[in-house]
Every structure is written in structure tokens, then in C-alpha cells.
Image (cartoon, rainbow, N blue to C red; front, side, top):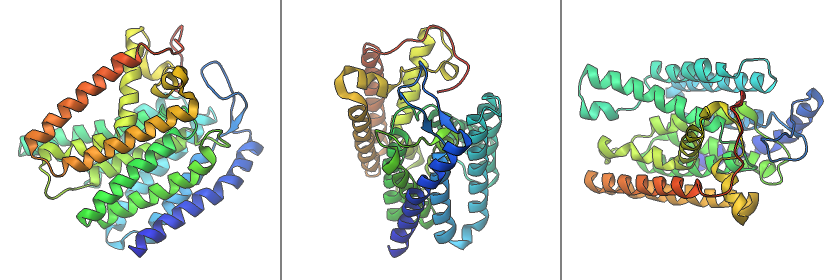
Length: 350
């Protein structure tokens, strides 16, 4: 218990404290997000906030993670560092944006596979080599998908950092309940790092995390989803838990993929103000209200994830059908909300 408190405190303090000097560095280097037609802020905002999140989270992990898992920790941090650096280079326009999706994210996912961090869902249905092969494919899809979702999810003040903190809290609670010390440490560190940065990132934001920070967060929560193991929950329904914990970025990505595809746009290459939060803000909630609503959705979905732990497979799958139906209904409803439509495909992910 004391170790968890210290892990959180170190991550929070480092992330919160480092944000100010990192903001000054971003300003001196000209690392700022310039307002344009596809963005909602009106003045240039410093980037590089992801470095503060990274430093806070990593320092807590290195300081308090169990040494028995040193090899796995090194691999996870190496992959997350790769994504942070690639994201920063992309923010500086030093890399083609597709390097993130087609090189950096798959490499990070393959690192986890090489470390033995993977899903076991397919193996529960198809024992043997077939199931193992399918699990590798599912792992790559999950890690790349969640990381890519986060790369376009950081589009409103406090959204990505706050939603991550809520998910990390539930991951930590479940890990503690199962006695998974490493997962609890990773979750607690990510919780502290995200909340420390949120103090400066909530509307009106003083700094943005940038693509590097967004991809770091996405990769870390994807890793938590793979490493969380619930002994009394069958594999046939355990897959629902990380999906429910990350339902907000998953839903937002699904919404814009459906919406942009219907309009003849490339989903990940057509930036615009058509995300879930933008639509909620446009019906009178404003930026803060929209973000708080999505916080609430993440919290309720987290409670559903904990509920799954005590359900039979049949009831859990029935809940999955209900959630999927509600998500489909929400997509249909949000498509009727006012949002700014892009005229033609863009070339830079938002």
C-alpha cells in the first residue's frame, strides 16, 4: 500500500513539477501548436507536455517496480520511448506522419510480443499453434489500434490525460485485487503522471502533450490491457474488461472512422473538428462540459468492467451486446449533432 502511494506521489510530483520548465523549453525552441481552421485553440500553445508525463511515469516505474520483471520493464519502456521520440520528431515536422502508424507503432507492438506480453483470447477458443498465431495478430491489432486512437484523441484540453487517469485508476484497482504487483505499479505511475500533467492541461490549457505524449499514453494503456490477468474471469469474457476501460477513445475513433468514411474521407488522414467532444461542445456543453461528460462515460464504463468480473460468460456477452448496441445508437445520434465538415482529405493526423 505504501509503495503504491509513493509511486503515485513521485509520478504526480515529477509530472506536475517538470511541466513548467518543459513549457519554457518548448517556447524557446518554437515547439508550439499554431491555431488553424481544424483546431479549436485561438493562441499558440506550447507542445512537449508529453515529456513531463513520460518523465513522471517512467521515474516512478524505475524507482518502485519489482526487480524480478526488469527485462520486461526495460522492453516496455524502450518501446514507449521510441513512440515518444517519434512523436516529438513528427511535431517538429522532421518525419513523415505515416512513420508513426506504419513503423513506430508496429515496432512497439512487436516488442511486447517478443517480451511475451500478448492476449490469450484466441487460444481460449483455438488451442495450439492456430490460437497462438491469432493471439499475436490480435496483440498487434490492439496495440497499434489503441496507440493510433490516442494519437487522434488528444484534440481538446484535458481530454486524453483525464480519460487516461480514469482508466489507469481502474486498471490499478483490478491489478491490486488480483495481486499483480507490476501491473499495479505501471497503473499507479501512469495515474500519477497523467494527473500531474492534467493540472496544466485542463481547459484553458497552458500546454499540450503533443503526438509523443499521446502515443506514450496510448501504448501504456494498451500494455496494461494486455498484462492485466483476472484469475477468476474466463478468457471468453475477460477481453471485455480492457475494452470497457478504454471505451472512450475506442468509441471516438470508431465514430470518426464511420463518419469520415461516409463522407468519402480517409479517417486517419482527414483532421477536423468532428470528434465526439467537438459535437458535444457544439450542443451547448462547451469544451469543459464535453470533456467532463466523457470523463463520466469513462468512469461508468470502468464500473461496468468491474461488474464483468463477477458475471458468467453468458451474462458478460449479453452485456457486450448491450454496450455495442448503445455505442451504435450513440454513433447514429452524434452524426445528427452539429459539427464542422471537412471539404477534402487532409494530410496530417489530428
